[in-house]
Image 1 (tube, rainbow, N blue to C red):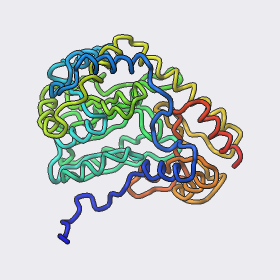
Image 2: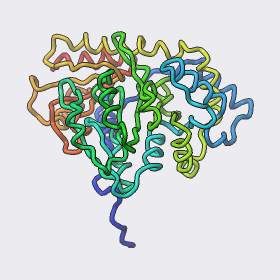
Image 3: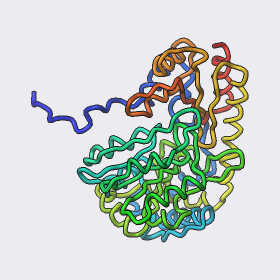
Length: 382
């Protein structure tokens, strides 16, 4: 047998999402772990895809994406944030948000570059940075409020800092950045060559009348930023794997150098269907109302129990603290919930490099109401 070379990702195994979904399946548990809807997409959208497939749009799309879709993306961003991106040269359609994140990192990071991330962090950031020789510097946002002390962030900045990665709204904490956060960030990057990757895949899922503030709203940040978004989160079709990256032309040029040799182009009929579907802005502007009802269903259903509900300002994930129920580590408690109480969740420690245990788990509420009601019935018995 040929000896394999040293692994480039020696500390990486199967993701916690796959692990918990498998455990849920093995135990016939209700799966509130992995972040995908269990309800169907809009039939109008499905019919549009069917239309374009039958019309013969089944070959390669242009490398940067179908122009009709990029134009709708540009309109969406301009209407929401008063920021202008040129559809042809500053917007690229990608095979999901994760591919966009990977490509942005690949286009920038070289050996020895330092990258600042905020934990709890989505699990794809650090491995991708490591693949390209980058060094991760972590700022820990601690329960229960997961706020950012920007004075501490400044201590992580050096002359080797190449990139700051934001996730706004944050998965898994459900935290959104406010005006003061952005002003602090502006002061940190001013006069530097630091770039920003802003993962905003949950941008349209923000609650209680609060407003999502995008990186592109601030010209001082927009000029140095990759903005990443996802249609899977927007239209309940995570399996279609389509997202996009919006960035100034100089950054987009570098992004596409990698993109063209990574996936080259993305599903043609679905791009055309999205372009038509986005013409009705209600198809995404009402998403916050739709998901707030589900968030409130979870929160009301757990009120009065020993679970402590943490704030959920955005995303379709609710974090809960369970220390009044058990002193077990979160991974062990999540396994116990799945096996004994038939509800699968995700332990927060999986979002920290050092597996920090805060006795917090994450529940996904992008599910049918009846699914959530069944899960709540089980959880209320604990």
